Image (cartoon, rainbow, N blue to C red; front, top):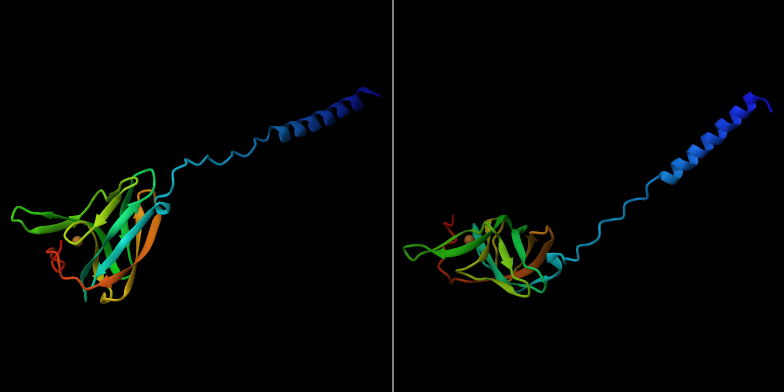
Length: 173
Ligand SMILES: [Cu+2]
């Protein structure tokens, strides 16, 4: 074996070794991040006694009691429905003249862990603005609320005639 052949063999062995090394050095795929163990809001929230106020046009309100069976507070940050151009989260407060005024709640509706959050005429409510068709008693309306964790909850509620409460749905803010 002359010197030249020996060098070529050494080169081949070196190349093979590099290839093997490269394979072995390939990093294993990163395992998916572990779950945080926090239940999505949509899996722990229910609503009872949900209903809509019948209205021919313009605005209406939705009411009911949200219940949170989870171990963490959850907050409803927005709502939507196919029957209205816009749905807002409203609260009702009494102004200096003793009149009820409603306004959008900036922080959303927070349902405490293991507790409930009530929507009632004259108090908190889902405000439907820009009704696309009359909301007639006996009909059923579907609403979707979105929580602060991004999950959503859709429920159906019947439309009822209702003339109580003093908030003015015709000239609301
Ligand atoms: Cu309102």
